[in-house]
Length: 261
Ligand SMILES: C[S@@+](CC[C@H](N)C(=O)[O-])C[C@H]1O[C@@H](n2cnc3c(N)ncnc32)[C@H](O)[C@@H]1O
Image (cartoon, rainbow, N blue to C red; front, side, top):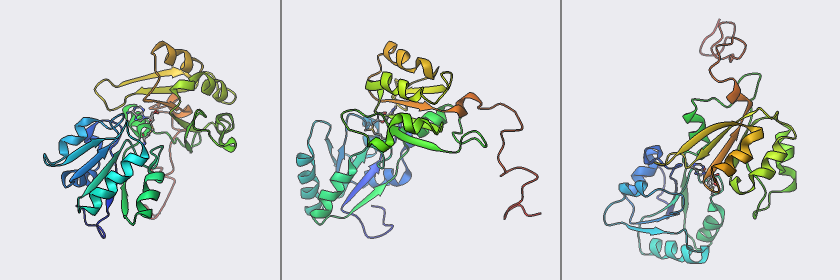
């Protein structure tokens, strides 16, 4: 195991969006040393398990409840096993690690979280896109439309849209019509939307559509799950050679610690 500090009982490892090569080195080392690996088989690709030793017990958890998963982890740790819990993308986003960690800590088990690449980062990378362009957009919002999981009223999509930031919409393919209506309250209809389906998987698809067509397009492609929407004014101006859209960082007029006068 990676010994940066006292070894944890359970390592929550961000597996990235799909491509096993997007796993961190630390995540890979932990998987290579694991005795027991629990993974959400709905989103974590089997390819990640190629790093597991043949002796490791790999447990798919998509069909299990929290009440079934936690005792498995507790029993494995108490038996002295090295336990890895694989989460899709980055564990800080929509991963339900909070409830798992709370119960493990209650059981006296220590945990460590290893970050992963989130779906929005792969979408931006596929487009060679910077989502924070000087004077155009400097904020990224990561959110979801309200569905079975209620979004707090202070975070309603229409109010977030008012910022006209780069907005990454998770878990929303099933209510994309409502999402589009809310976003159009503030973003212009021609605002580009990157629609990413199963990014990093062999059947990955990535399209660019205007916001006004986001819902109809999703319906036409029958997108209901594993879809990320990236709505951003920055996608309209990527790679234009205009001098106005440049950062201070590399400007000859701008001086800083590493490039003094
Ligand atoms: C339960 S959340 C997990 C998010 C994950 N923790 C992350 O950081 O990407 C699942 C949602 O994330 C997005 N997502 C996760 N993996 C994806 C992928 N490979 N391609 C497109 N969207 C993905 C979709 O919006 C999907 O509905």
